[in-house]
Structures are given as C-alpha cells and as structure tokens.
Length: 98
Image (tube, rainbow, N blue to C red; front, side, top):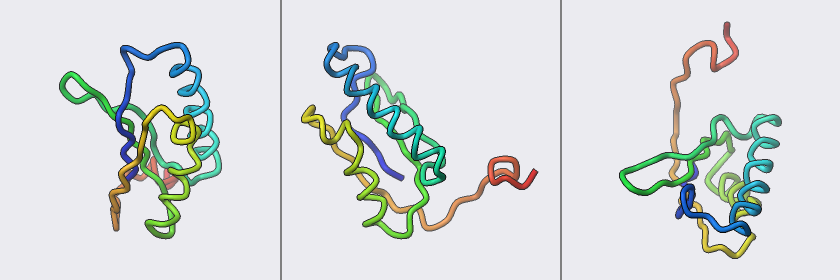
C-alpha cells in the first residue's frame, strides 16, 4: 500500500488542484493497466491522506510507481510511505472471479 501525505482536499490552491488532476490521471492509467488495484483519498479526523493499493513485484517496484506520480514531481511537498502487504483477500467479483 502506498500512503500519500500530506493531502489538501479542502484548502488546495489552483496550482495544487492542477497538479492533483495530473496525479488522478496517472493513477487512472495505472488502474487501467492493472498495477493499481484501488486508489483514493482517506479522511481521518480533520485531515486526509491518499491511498494506492498496488500490485508490484517488490517494495522497489512499488516505490518506482510512487516516484513516477506527477504529484511527487510537482514540488508541493508530497511523499509516499510504502507499506508492504504480503497478501490480500479480495471478494470474488473484485478478483475477476464472478
């Protein structure tokens, strides 16, 4: 799991929102090619952070996906924490076993 911190869903500037549009498009492409399983914001208390559950061979591959995110390259101070999940249980429809 990749955790994006910080997030600014309620107080973003126009420039930050433009950067976020590139971030969203990037993760849509990763979802379409199968490397992203689920991506979205997580609201926690008064704050928020982003979550990307990815399919990667190892932590380095997950880090490469995170590093290629335009929001990381934007210079707005974002970072990803990479939190390995060695296994996952999916409901059959989510795993494509309908």
